[in-house]
Image (cartoon, rainbow, N blue to C red):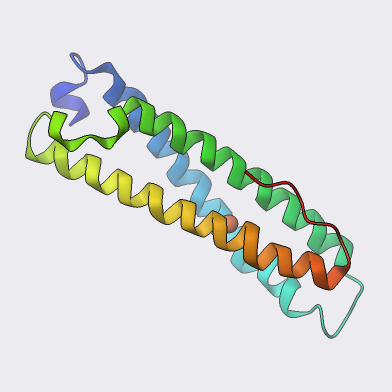
Length: 133
Ligand SMILES: [Fe+2]
């Protein structure tokens, strides 16, 4: 898509760059959740010691979620609001629909962690809820 239309549609180049950055960041984010945050959470009942580390992890993940939200907003703007009626063709239409689906999935992920899981963890740790966007 970028190779064919990038010279006349520079937003595709920016969109590709943000997508690749997001992809790399998400792989690191998921690894951090699976290898550090969730095991900490699982150990909360047995050992109150790591509470500060859990809170540190929560703040780190919330900051990462905020960064993802900013990237998604920028991508949406570059993609014309994912308006597939303005697509350059079938491939571009599928790209726009797929990116919109990714955006929805990531917003759901962020909502479930920030507003459900992390809030519950903070309640268990006696910490006030963080401001989330
Ligand atoms: Fe997350």
